[in-house]
Length: 215
Image (cartoon, rainbow, N blue to C red):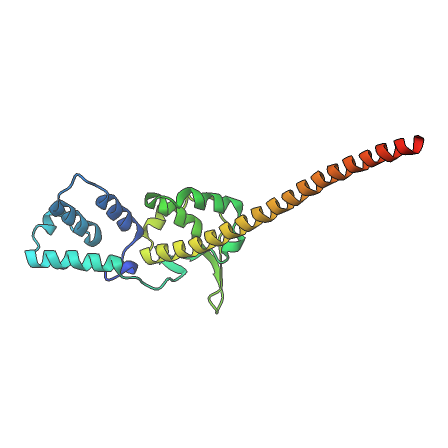
């Protein structure tokens, strides 16, 4: 029996990782049943086929899968699915409000990562000799979300790193902006308070010296 086993996260697609995440979060399975399902997810074998594997090969396959899940692969911003080339958003700094809202909506749960990836990756419109490219405009996740389940996990993790860096930059910018605005407001309130104090002093002086002059 020939068994194809992933060597690194580039050989694992997103839907396999989503199924694996569901599996490891279950507490109703014994280790043996969990391992059988793990082999099914990453090799495509049926339960009865897994049970026909020798005990030594069984243990080795489990070990190889675990190693593949831990082995990184260089991020590449483009990949093919069903003869369609998809590309990562060329400039995250220029994403639209709609894109950013949907990214924030889907980023928190592995089970919605296919929707998230349908925002971050879209079909390439044109590409030049230097591999610079443009992608189709964003029209929501409905058309490509299911297809994104077939994308390599290496592209998923790479995109998440890029977006995480952008989110950190946005957070730093937002905090700095709020601090600057608060400083401006504090200064304005101080000026107002000082202005009121000066007005009171002026009124008092006018009243006092005015009375002295009249007497």
